[in-house]
Length: 269
Image 1 (cartoon, helix red, strand yellow):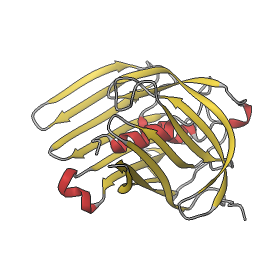
Image 2: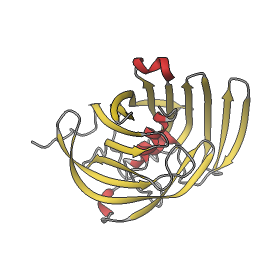
Image 3: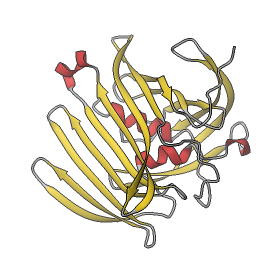
Image 4: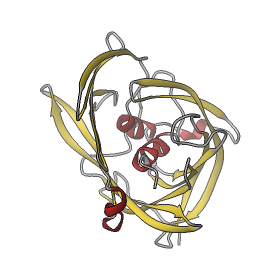
């Protein structure tokens, strides 16, 4: 199983949207207490098998005495995979309630015998971020340049949901930015594929917006491949289903449970 399975999920959810020019959201589609749990299935020996779970949550919080959202994603392998490759990963951000720009991003990687801690401290007044990196045998600090519309992994997921999709037309291609491991990736294209009805793993039908995206060559994805993402066609914009080819095999990601969404989820009869 690919060691970056949970990074793939965070990236895939982010990549399902377009970038807004001024980066100021006009609508926040989530609220305090929202919690979403995903099931991940991995293609092994031509069979789809349960491999892991990811939980996303939102909480009201304080950072440097300012009101903010604390948004968190935790991923783990199922117990029957722990003997093979144990994963316990955490991504979290403290973000502005007005702009959704991050102040502090946390990444804690625990995968097999490998561990890594990242802390990003953002200063958008000078478009820079101080990055503190710690591994088992060394620590490092580095200041990187960012754009005014660059976001970390967690903030990207939630900022993305605030975008107005109604302006898109079938086949539109839109560039996006994201910071991954101290690198700002620009001009990654997403392609709008229209609106479709999907059936969840619990056999419930729902209206969704469908995108495909060009994957970043040389990372965890196959060159030239695209990823498919489906988000709810409503005020919540919750990612419901993701499928992608990866360097070793393929994954499918399904929503398991949704709690405390800002608006009631409306399934089809």
